[in-house]
Image 1 (cartoon, rainbow, N blue to C red):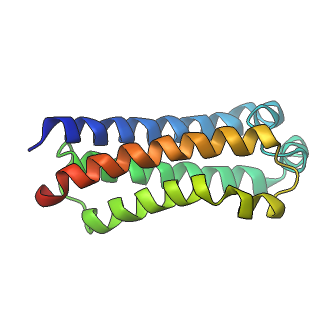
Image 2: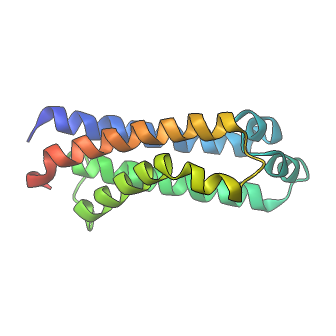
Length: 143
């Protein structure tokens, strides 16, 4: 198995897991973390009011990111085979890269998110997507 490609997917798994932890930190810290991450004043105020919506949405994103991390580790050969690993890795790449490129279309739906949020988060998603993409392409025959 291509060790560089495996390392790319392990790195991608670590990035996804780190992003999941950052989302969980928002739940634990509350409104200041939502503001710092640029999630918008409405989310921050809802967190301050102890409404469940921000925590549930943020937890769901964290769970998805952790599942993606598991698929990257499976693709790298560090976890046992997971169902539909090839398809999942392609969809993960598409989701990260799609999110990175589609922010101009998404931005109007979330007007409270700061420009900094959109540029930073889109750049992060682009990097994450490229790491997953190159690892997946290089390991494709072995997946």
